[in-house]
Length: 99
Picture (cartoon, rainbow, N blue to C red):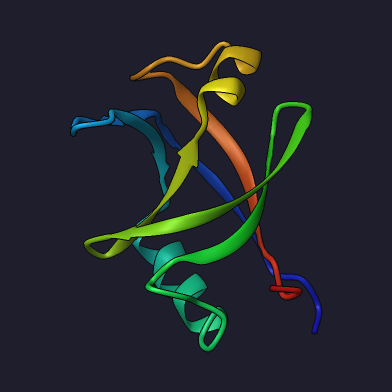
């Protein structure tokens, strides 16, 4: 299967909960396309992906939130890339078919 990728452009948001976390939301349109492409590969709604961000390639899983997927931004990645809430960001997302 040929890899499918999405260029995700958006603003870093913070989820406030018992353990705050930072995300890059995918567009509703890209999220719908990814959901179709990942049919049968998801587990508990999550989709295993590779994310290219700056100079790093990160293995992670996208979380569904309403009608869009959220790209999690770990603390180590945020520090390395100098990311903060409200910053505009572009990342490339590819489904991991090997999971």
